[in-house]
Image (cartoon, rainbow, N blue to C red; front, top):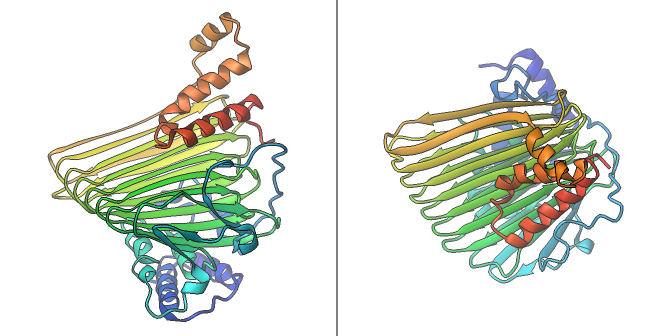
Length: 431
């Protein structure tokens, strides 16, 4: 079926503004296949079911809106003090001079830009492959656009237990930068890796992370999205889990004009576990969208979706989450919760929780709530000498606790709590 003229024109304009991608070998093939997918679906519009709550106009535009850099002052950078392997990208381009030597026991790391010309590579079974699987039943055009045009990224092959976390640091320098990064991670049976991400990356940022977690492997992902308030971002995680595999992903977002985070996880092997969580603190012209789709395709698998948003001064939060239980996926344990705390009457939370179940021996639940801060609890704290601003911050932290508790590393979790406490002390403002 031909695309509507408006979608066809929007896609043509978007593609014309992108730099040409060169290359050969497996990557050129993957890009061509992704472009064919994108051409068939077009860019999203507000009439598309999964874009009803989030306006994609600024993501469709050929040119990104300018975004000023955020001055963090004396605020420490995330994960400082941790023993980690640092890989730095500036406006979407790898910066070897600011990065560590990419050598790590149990891990092989390559740049996408350098590995793509090979005719045979392990990543050709992942790059664009998991993204393509994630295009049904819901189209994800920006992921296909990324697979077709991403110019850089890292390919991480984990064969054992990584000696330390890998830290991807995204630096925003140009106010007009438009970056696309694509990362692939493959964990062999029994392997383990912690992947850290932080930074605003660009004025407009597109990122795809594809993760293959083999039997008994464990993947931990912690992401702190940058504080540059005027930035816009659309990110995707596609993951496929083997038997007994574990996948954990947590994202903390503060500031940002528009953020859309999508996660598509397939539990393909028995007794696999997937936990996807997020905490967001938004002020003013802040729009934050979490869209999650988890498929149970094997027996005795567990999934958790835990999303909390604190919104103030007219901020908007969106959650769209689905649990799909396929026939034969008996003994499924699926849990989903999305909640917002509205600190004023101008903010709003839009939620669309879904369950689709085709097995009869399952335990699945979902819930979504939105409300104001507990005035009784606030009064209780104030009556015991706690200043109102401090009392409100304590209640906000308590509200976010369930999401932060999904971070398995307690040292990182405690740093996130402390960072949030400092932000909230400044009323969660953009500064």
